[in-house]
Image 1: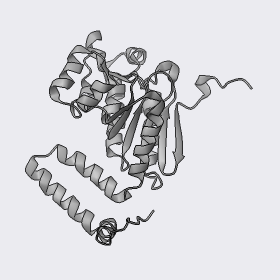
Image 2: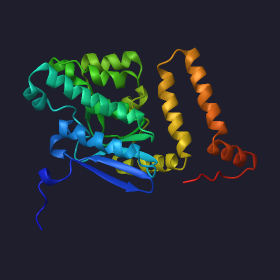
Image 3: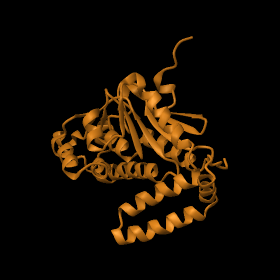
Length: 264
């Protein structure tokens, strides 16, 4: 049987196993560019996952040599006028925000190069595990279009001076430097990438779902508040957590020196 042409393959592959939903960008020959089609496919998948109580953790992965090379410059050039280009970036921004607003934690599985909006996607995920072969760059400045939107997510992950170095120079940074700067959580040999991602997903999937979801939401919300308002909001959230059924079960388990039993 002959192979199915790439054009007939799904642009995004969803695989669900044991509460782990893996979304894999599947345009390897295009370096998984964030075309309108790809953005739409990811947005649709995230919208569905957000309503799926069976999903505990999401992994955002990619096929091929690279992770994601960012936007498709040919598509942007063809759009031509400003309103159409603005509409594309609004759709991309909504998709990026959906990653943060998703009730489930999202882990980027980065096996290769992540450039521009691809680097933005890694930064936007809650956690990131990278292969030693992964590289990261925001190279727009070199070509006359500053990576402003990638800078939103990158600048909220790493030190301001490091973010500006990436944005102003467009230089590549390797996986070890990305980890030292705070862009990724772990760096492992390529052959150990799946095992490292699997270990992390299983650890998160074992946590109480409502607690994890509310904790994620509160973390991002308080980051944009003054410290006084952040503590007020966080105090409300942690109070609600303790009086929730999950919190009560957790306290009982701790006091009784046993493992907690979470309702599925």
